[in-house]
Amino acid sequence: MLGSVIADEIALRPDHPNRYVVVKGDTLWDISARFLETPWRWPEVWSFNPQIKNPHLIYPGDVVSLVYDEQGRPMLKVDRGQPTVKLSPKVRATRVDAPISTIPLNAIQQFLGQPQVISEREINNAAYIIASSDQHLIAGKGDNIYVRGLISGSEANYSVIRIGDPYQNEDAKPGDILGYEAIHVADAVVENFGDPSTLLIIESTREVIVGDRLLPKKDYGFDQTFIPHPPDSPIEGQIIDVMDGVSRIGQFQTVVINKGENDGIETGHVLAVFQTGAKIRDPRAGKGGEYVSLPDVRAGIVMVIRSFDLVSYAMVMESQRDMRVYDYVRNP
Image 1 (cartoon, rainbow, N blue to C red):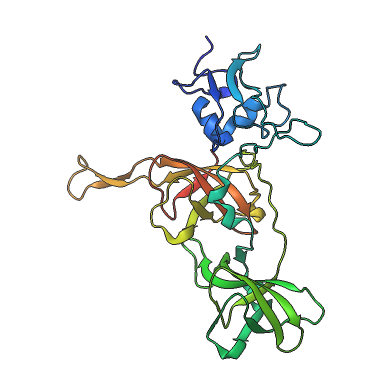
Image 2 (image 1 turned 135 degrees about the horizontal axis):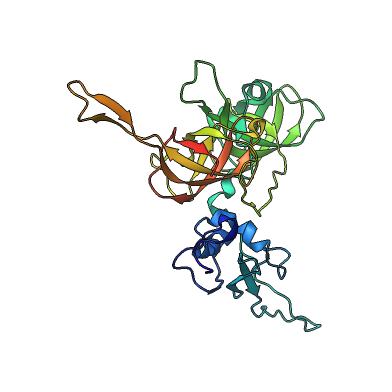
């Protein structure tokens, strides 16, 4: 019988609907979670649907229906809603609403547009601020800053960053650092090269201070599709930090894991989070007792949103319990 468990081990939720009308604010993950026990496997379901070549082009008003192919595999079929009509001199109908995203992009936008992890070598080679206009202790938009370490005729646009906490493994030895958090402070443009060079701050998100570093400003464009998929090889890592300084980690928060591109991690990789099972004393083991480790407990699912050489940022997509720094991440 076609039901909750079918071919290829794709399980449907017992309370899944037969159809769903997409609304503004939905994500592909949200919609898949209404139908599937493992929503991160939605690419496998959409790929069976010959009607939609690109499942990311799904709009509010579209109707998603659950159907099955000849082998009994589920398909999420999409029927197009009526497009929004925008009048023009040629009176032609064009869709003006935006397709839904894979995940809530507003929750991770800040982690995608600027450099976020920097190595010790990059820190040592980066230009740095030695003073601001009128010798003020802090500077902001519209102020001049004076910088050493810029090469005459090099890049004209720079990101001002502040070096944050180091990223380290739980059992790290002194000096065993995977990278440093690079906090974006401001954007600046060169007015005059020299020693020091003079730059003008054109945008700032924090107060600029002496000692802040500068990196050439780049377009850190990113693929907004975030196709979820498991790693190709076994991964055994840990959460080593959580962004925004929270102590408890829940859904849609961003964490740092100690695996990166050098370990084969890439954007879209899905990992399960596990917490080490508690150690308890066996009450029948006699005086002094014997301690037994309980099985590890699954706490949720994260998906990599940006990867660096040795670490990656991952978004918590599902949370069955509060996660903690040093929880383990493994293949789902």
